[in-house]
Length: 99
Image 1 (spheres, helix red, strand yellow):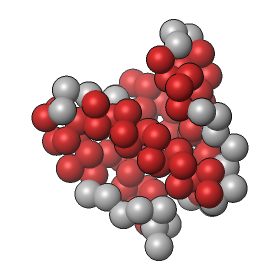
Image 2 (cartoon, rainbow, N blue to C red; image 1 turned 45 degrees about the vertical axis):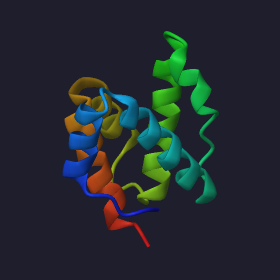
Image 3 (cartoon, rainbow, N blue to C red; image 1 turned 120 degrees about the horizontal axis):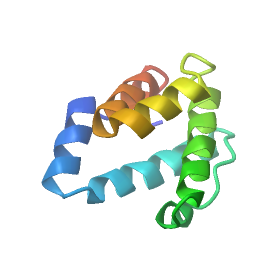
């Protein structure tokens, strides 16, 4: 996993009008898949309702990579309800396992 500053995740997402959010999802997904997660293609993010299922699979990957330090449900609620702030909290958890 790549170490990223959680505050920069928020700032870059705001500055780029949300484009960095997509970049963060794709790069983080690729890194988690390299660690053994099974997250499908990020193209599913653009399909309504399917993107919610994809986000759940993404959060399952977070649980796997963090060795259950952050559960699937917690990660999903953080990202789904808090958006950028949730992404920053999740990134903080991912930073703990970054090499």
